[in-house]
Image 1 (cartoon, rainbow, N blue to C red):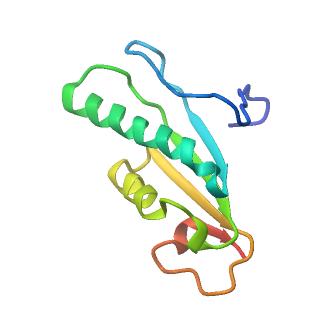
Image 2: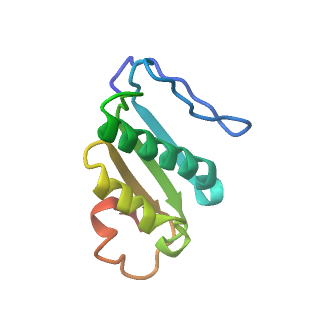
Length: 119
């Protein structure tokens, strides 16, 4: 987003992401804290499936970019972190993630360091 961009924001409740073939690509920003990652991780997997299908078949929904911002107390509480890193590697530039930790007392592992901010 840039200054003065229009965004849609949804907090909690019943939500989903189900684009149809022919829909315009959108840029998604997903924001999660703690176990709130669960529904957003499902959306991320769905996006990866759509992207893989589109690359394999050359048709269907054309995905925009997805940025995930995910916060937890420490890296051990970042659920699905290895899966998320795998998706970023599988779809470079299409799926990105920034982890944020608020109470990290130990060194952040090298694999997460480039993607993690916080204490």
